[in-house]
Length: 348
Ligand SMILES: [Zn+2]
Image (tube, rainbow, N blue to C red; front, side, top):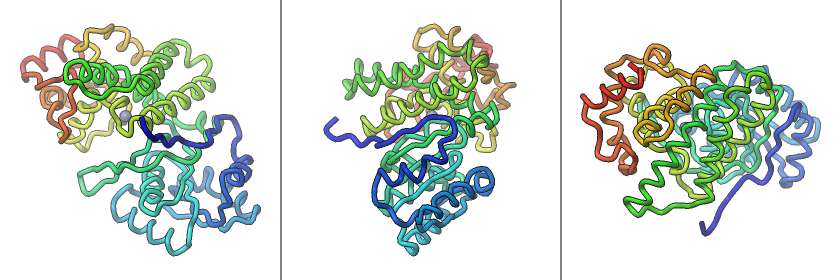
């Protein structure tokens, strides 16, 4: 923990758009801004932000993202260079923000995130996932200079994205337990502040499970704060360790074995957290009940992934990372045992 870079401004409230020009002015003397967004986001937000910034005298350009792949990254880098951009604003869901962050990293230009969904912890994280064919590779970048969360816009997004975001936060519970295991058994570096940020974020979302529907807007705020805390935990350690353990390895293995699956990231890691909480010997029934309260999948039918894939994923997930991150999966679970565990938990 020698040097930490964190966002300088975080705004979470309703109707944040009118604040954006003032916020940018307070951050630095920026002149040329590039909005990185998708076509859907253009209708929802892009035009309004473009008008606000142009009126304030900023040279503002928009560029559209369809995929978070290498050729899109190269295209937008070229465009940003040509326009002499000094600030990037990523608007939208995962793809747009992944690309905005990666361009910002390669060109060393700061970026601001304006999320329109909260389906995973990417809004405040310092890494992007870029795809190349069927493969995905992470890029370690900087955290955003600012994050602008508009509760009204987020409350209009489909509930499933909110639930997936909650799933990604719940997953931090087993991620931190895995980290503690690696600290105790493998003497791995551990950071209390980062671990607590991630762990208590998960606890907050678990505690809110039964009441979130009654007060949806304040639950969205709670989720935004939890996701930002998780991003900060990763920035503190410059690693995904506090936020990604065996449950994420299970999810990545599913994606590797069955890339055509349509489940959201937060849905897969939440199911993984349920299974790994059983292996860790904590209250897995509480995790299952929490997932059910958020309408998150707890079995193969709900997540729409074949039983054989889930069995294979559980028995091979320990091998998915090239750095062989140490977790409760240790040296792997035999296939028969994986099947028994999934049956015991009524996942299959
Ligand atoms: Zn995640």
